[in-house]
Image (cartoon, rainbow, N blue to C red; front, side):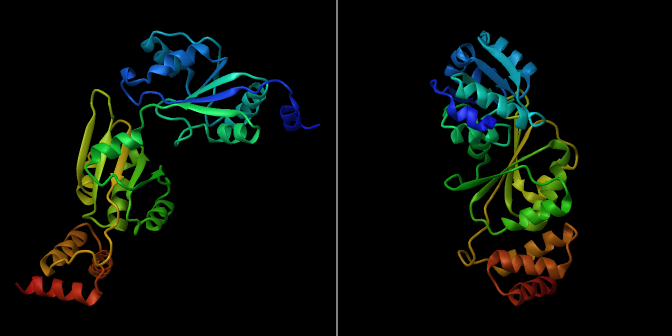
Length: 292
């Protein structure tokens, strides 16, 4: 009999997996139910047990059950252990360093395994860096998609960005501070230098900052050095043919790309695609601007 069969064959009442949102900065943002869940859980699985200890101290509560680590390095092994406990009737609380478990954090494997074994999964809703940054960005919020962390390697990153270059919905990304400038530069190259974006830094913390502007401008700002936890919100691609762009604006967009180091032929092609116009129209606009 396999271990998985042993789990499903257990005849007692199944337990509950609770996904708990934790503050993304200010501990005062913790959901009211979180303290009670921390005290009631048989097992608290935490991405970082030290940060969990600081959180419980800030909330003035104590964990009532066993605390175990649950992070990327031990996620596979720990998932099997936690499923065994859940099938035996335990109440397991999963918390990550900030935000909701499984959203670019450990948790997906455990949720999928719990569902497969018929274990009830519920959540304590909490702060979300994705939604907070989206709301503060000043960009359209009616439709958006979350893209997580861009790939680290430049080629893979550019390829992933090209996949969503024509995406009309607002895009939301996480990024580390030391890769932010390179990512914003790649976005400017793929999405266009004038595509609007917002860099949201240290949300809800003491040094919270939201920097808004065109991608090329944000890339130059980030090149000076940025610290903290970063969420990037990028305007979706404009629908082709939805708005007319005059010749001067077309020439300005080409010039901006050339200043960023792009060849004129490539810049004209990108601007034409962005504006939904033939390349010849953009070329003519550039020539006319040079003649003025």
